[in-house]
Amino acid sequence: MARQLDEQIAGRFPVGRRLRVLDVGMGRGTQALRLARAGHQVTGIEKDTAMLSAARAALCAEPEGIRERVRLIEGDGRDTGVHFLPGSFDVVLCHGVLMYVDDPDPLLAGLARMLAPGGLLSLLVRNADALAMRPGLSGDWQTTLAAFDSTTYRNRLGLDGRADRLEALTATLAGIAAPLHAWYGVQVFTDTAADEEPPPDDPTALLAAEERAGRTEPYRAVAALLHLCGVRG
Image (tube, rainbow, N blue to C red; front, top):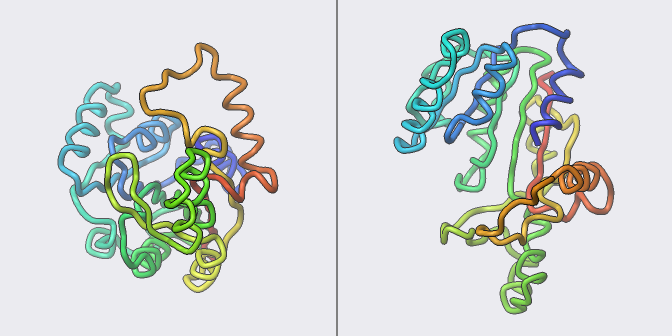
């Protein structure tokens, strides 16, 4: 997914421009630090104190030049209007967050307001149109049948989540003046891999297959996750 995001950034902004990035629900800060290393000014918001502590520890291990480009805030992504003025960012990331928000529309509208004109909104969501794939490939037929008409699921950690449909999110993005520009599938072939299964010694072929499938019909439509990129009008 990092390659997809970099591709969208490169296609929208001049080479070498230092972007203002907001990472909502940044977790351990992996994406935020990666973008800071690339020269961008990054603000990360995270409400989970354990995740925020991990992000701060990772940031402390970075060189001073990178540390000074990152600001970390403890807070909820639905409160961006409290912290920032509209149009404050060129790129807003919201990866792996919407599945834990009952009503995502207010959150998305708030994130769109944070974007400057022409800014990029990057979302990573659970694909409701593919919820039957994991239990089906695992032979859990009762769960498979129930998943066809559902937008809820239970993840491997035992947490209940909510999935989104591409059609509905496309309409939402159009309604908040950040219409869909591009979308990709994520975890097309690897979603059923066991958590304890070690990665291959050379993941080159695996990554290439996932990258190709994430851009290609019909494979991307049945990916476990969807990566959507909207652009502020």
